[in-house]
Image (spheres, rainbow, N blue to C red):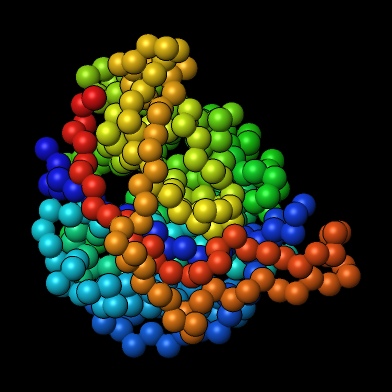
Length: 371
């Protein structure tokens, strides 16, 4: 039985990609390192003994300190214990894909493996204060590469942290890269000769369903939600065969994205469940969709585990006009000015996140694990 009856989406609306009408830029300079004074969030320290690239370390410092500062300000400016201390509400703080990605073109804008592991460890450590015991942090993704004997492999790892003193961390690897991800698509886990059988097997794909707080959360990274892939839906369908008796869907389906609109054919949430989407490239920057019903053809009574079924959804608007402004000093910088060497057309980079903020959606009931 779930420890929580209700949930609330805190969408961190921030640009992690830019678009010129033809091309997508998914990494640029992190900007100056903000001063993080500490507080409820622990001060991050991304240093590691094997750091060989000062620019990489400086980038990690900036992004971790900014993330820590934004969460701290969201807690304090959003009302502190008076608002966030209400029991029984699961707060889901979600950032978009590519949030942790360095401006290091020589390695396809990816952190080295040692630096990435430290970033992910610091994210696990930062939210151990008791006030975050009922928070889930979907920290976007960390883009990194690992050098193997056969050459580099590029990873795009979603980091999910359950806060509080006894918090846990889950990591999910994106199976395949899209054409806008900025890495060699053939050198990603889902295409790598040695890794492909494992990451495409049911055991690894099952990691898209996270069990915590007595409930299940579904998680996808951008392209995985596309109608061609439908990764979470297929995991749920396979689970009905490999793990009979498990629920035919999840109460909450989380999508951290960089250019992926919601797709009703790909949703894995049960009837009266929700899709929570936060996107740093494609507008709108966030959305919360409630599944009204599942249909297979003209017949109702279907579930996410029903092949070919489609969800009917209804958008939930952010509640009571509550948005938490992000101070300019904590803004992700604007993308760089294009030069003559950049791809045509010579149109300035544009972002689909007009205001950097935490968009707080209204509290909603969590459906039980059965449809």
